[in-house]
Length: 377
Image (cartoon, rainbow, N blue to C red; front, top):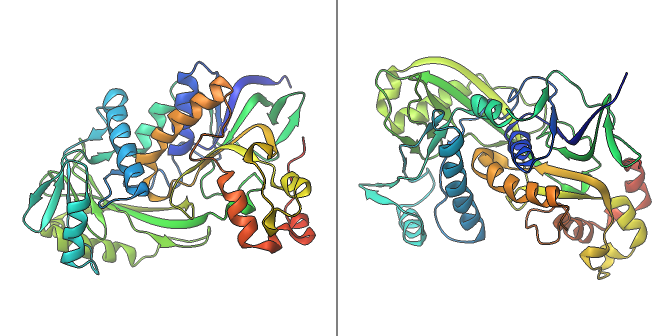
């Protein structure tokens, strides 16, 4: 069977794969997408796709809010019909004292209005998750119900079945990774989302322990944003419907009369520092062979690390994928398209090399290396 060649292959059809696929195509690359099931059939399709800011101060807050501003502007250009940008009303969470809530308000740099006991953010909203992912892939060749079994690198190209490309981006979310990424130590965050049809349209997002979206064009609304650390085989908890509805009614009593439509759930991977992981993928096995004393404190310049050729990781957006993925994808796609070095990329996977190996000396042992086989190339 003849090989179908592309400039880049993206594995994964969620918001991560859709975002990086869109911006690679925007940079004039011929992109194909390999998706195990259907586009946005995993955690992305189960997401409430809330576009909400973060209160307070610090580098993480600044990153989230900068990504939010970019992504909302981006969605306004490419998918205004899928976007509901009516703002968000944020209440104090349970366990969050009024004093702490008010202190965070004072530290918040982005635009807001005080409304009684709550704070209103005008630049916030929600978006239709599945239709958005489908739109982002419009300039890519998409192969659904296609399994990426074994990655092979031959003659300067990555091969997956009959597909080949010089560049490969793995954006498989919380599904079992195709990469030897044991050292990244990402964790699963399980989320559930209800879809309801309120009696009257909901004007804007409501945010507290959970979130309620403003009504979409089809008059449905999302209730979700649960965060439960879990294993990949987690299932929807039947009690989640009552749990989410009870919290939603506390914020917005009229939800009590809404028609329940369905519930979906999905696993989202998150990094230990809550910042997405995206960039060139290091060859951890070779790094440890080249620098066996790295876990014991040996100083090694990052530009001395070994990387798999033209292989990129894109993921770990946690529960904020629809906020952060487009922002990160634009940066990383430019690096890929221009063949630039990844050193200045703040999302690069290599930032975890030193963290993991120096906190866990056993990670460098021969036994550990034998457990996780490197990719062959």
